[in-house]
Image 1 (tube, one colour):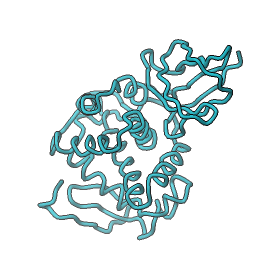
Image 2 (tube, helix red, strand yellow; image 1 turned 120 degrees about the vertical axis):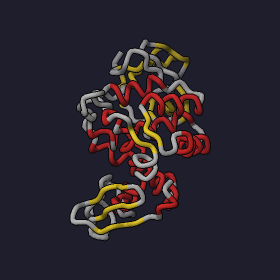
Image 3 (cartoon, one colour; image 1 turned 180 degrees about the vertical axis):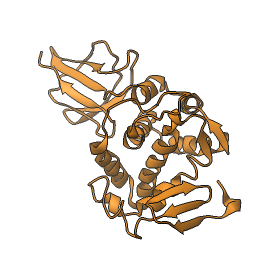
Image 4 (cartoon, one colour; image 1 turned 135 degrees about the vertical axis):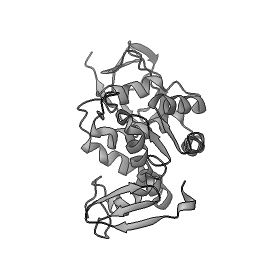
Length: 263
């Protein structure tokens, strides 16, 4: 987004930082984060973390910039997600998905990702790994990879060289995707809990609901019932659908938990 300024990698006596058209670098010229794989999957050693991550900030941070530090997730969640995109381009979707799931071990779920406005107070450091997994989850909900990439590119066109708010980013993604994503953003950005899909089988029915969520949470989710793919549309109240199944497995690329209720 700053092609007229060129691109520079400047060696520095600290780990690294993004700057418009210039990345300062101190990662020791080795793959990973100071030689470590942040995902513990092996894929984090396939690229130099500082070069990829800080370069990603050219789009999310330097091209699109938050108006209030409380919205720092706009910088860090999307830029962390760009690491997945790098892996997907060079090594395939399986590698990117494994990396996304691997970094979940570092999510703390301690407080909301969005901070407090107008007092120079940023949100949880979960804006990196949890924020990236929120975007990864939204990609599953949209279910159209080409549309998802158009949305990411479109954000950088729509808000080219602008300062933005969370609401502007949310509204753009909701409009372009045609999906009801507001409860998902509320859950992952404004709450700290992990959604739990509770379920049980009884009388040839699957009974299920979302728990541990904001009140209007209604995210659709892909599950496998006895190995067969099924899309569920849970809400926070119990509902039932006919099923003779015995085992349910949630698609692992959604950042949620599941719990079989003893009934």
